[in-house]
Image (tube, rainbow, N blue to C red):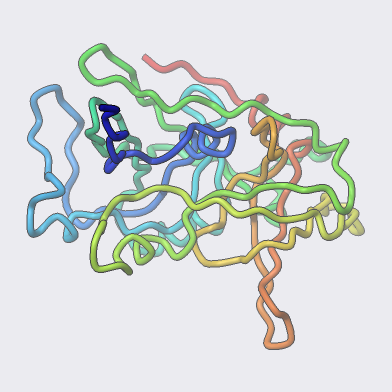
Length: 268
């Protein structure tokens, strides 16, 4: 007799290109407890702990791993965290044998967008680079891989794109009465509705994308559906009663990549 296929109770599904992108996206925010540097034998809070939800990060936005120790996000996300007057963190994860471990890493340094046209900080461009010197060891590996860059100069109006991030922050993971507290990005499918050219000397091009713009998606990745290459980063959204759904704006990778690659440091 043929045995029935086991039900994959703990599976997160087929490993698609979009799934691989989500593995490079971290929530950025604050913690409701005092975090200590991670150690090999440190005790954790399990999902079976009745007080587990009290220890969840308060998510303020999304950060994209774009290099060793480099995470890209928005200046808006950075300011939202700073207003809380506490240390900011990103939340990485390790998966082992149907178990998932969340590990917070502090954000010691933030560099606002430096405009190559002026060699100075441009506050009108909503981007910031988080420097997180997370050292990977055998006992405690840091397994978040940088995304591969795509060519945003080849993107045109009407092209399909996907967007991923942490909309609604922590609330999204506490909405349902079961399966609570499993933090993971949400992926949207959309279209380049328009490409807005730079008008003022301090402007840059922007993608206008037809996907829902919800709080927490700031800093989210805009990527090609088939290859999962990074084409841009979500910066802001527009809400109005006359709109059937919010519209988001994104900075293209042609602006972000030179900025990221111009900054170097060593993880010791």
